[in-house]
Image (tube, rainbow, N blue to C red):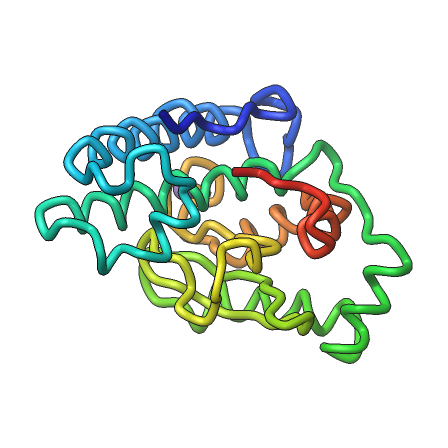
Length: 206
Ligand code: MN
């Protein structure tokens, strides 16, 4: 039985960047529904019973046809949202000097990485989906994925460092059509210590 990650803050704690009603609705309605539906879908795929979510999500081609779509959409929704909600902290947390060096090595400087992630989320991605900072073979890069899919570039979900949820439910109550402002706001609450811990395999969200 998969369970949502516990919110490491109160609904209102990410204000004014991510508003209370959005956090509450997103976590209690959307994330809960993905998680409940994922648990239901697994009942139709007995070979996945007791398997970790990352194994299920990387082996969807082995799922029974009747359960595959539900596992992909809801399993992805479950996994991505656990990462998302644990990526934020009230007021944000700055990157360490060590992590900044790694970003600098792969993007030139920290701001270039943020700009690239922002552009991926607001310009490269069309429709609902996610933008990501990932680490593959130690190298950081920016990718996008549609719907609740995990990015096709990864070999394991452990390579996912930072998600940007670009479904309208993540921002529409406060930001309406202003996607760029939402991403700016999201960047102000990112917990970069968490992102670094994921890179170093020191924190397991799911
Ligand atoms: Mn979402």
